[in-house]
Image (cartoon, protein in one colour):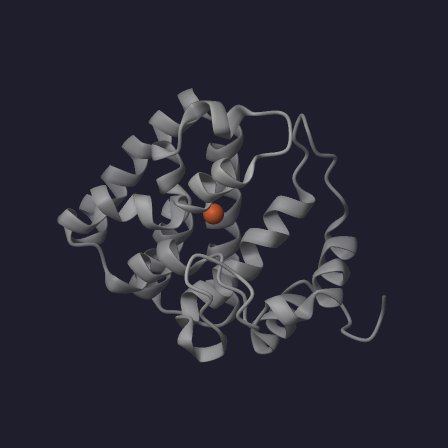
Length: 191
Ligand SMILES: [Fe+2]
């Protein structure tokens, strides 16, 4: 499927998500905006950047298939509910794989919660077993979540978010984390 067609699918999903889960919809837009900024910063060309931004837009699309009561649950999730939530990485591919999405987008959707040290999910991939774009979205996803104001979460400053991420740097590709710092002109050495 070409980017133009996939963009229309992404727009339709975005509308659906906006209606069902406005916070998730806002988060997907925030991650896509950060993907655009990161892509420009590292010099991705037009089509590559467009594809990368689409991956940002779609990364959490599988949450549409997680039961609504789990998404909306205000309390701590049980282990079973948490497993269902973690399933969102694989669920999106049930409806996106038949469309023949770019494999780099599929990797972002499946692997954006894999940690660089192997401690993430769903497969416990580590280091370069994780696709390069998924390693970038792993960091941008965290950054977007930390700085966003939501009804249940007071966003922190971008600077605090970056340094919090650095304190948990085992989760992130070190080169990606340094690039995100550089992109926002944040000195690596300050905390
Ligand atoms: Fe996610």
